[in-house]
Length: 204
Image (cartoon, rainbow, N blue to C red):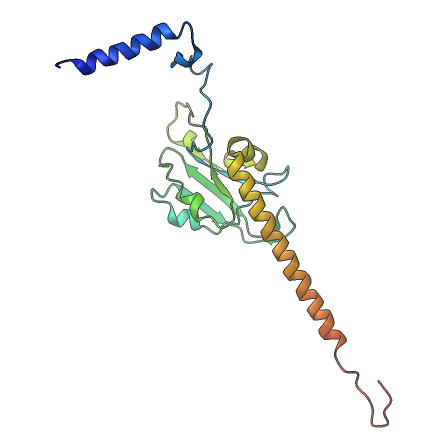
């Protein structure tokens, strides 16, 4: 029937309008920005950098490998690698980014940077509103703006963050076990070295 779609649309609008007076489920409009709809865990928008501990510089997981920069389709990531190393959150010396910028005005939220990162250092945020009068400099986020704690990561993506932490803990345990085994092997090898003797049989 001609106009049937319009009639159905108007009926749905009327159902929500009058139904909103008796049911919160019909409140399809919120008073943004004072009110905001809760984000689902799988929502993603722009990337951020994860750091462990309380210090965003000392605990930054990023080691400036630049894989995300190379793989980024719109080329909105810019990284400068340090010349020296600093201890990370587990006291292991690592390179770090002296500069890490993301132009969110260019970012297409494809999440490729997250998928290729071998250190679980970059994740997707749920924030979507960055109002500004400057669409260029104000939307070029630097390392300080991008760094967010692992606790924040757990707040916005609890299931994913828990799985990541479990994986990182397993890797650390494996690395510690490997180091302990290597140390034990080295000690056993040193103990097995024969003692040199003189021609008369006295040990030296």
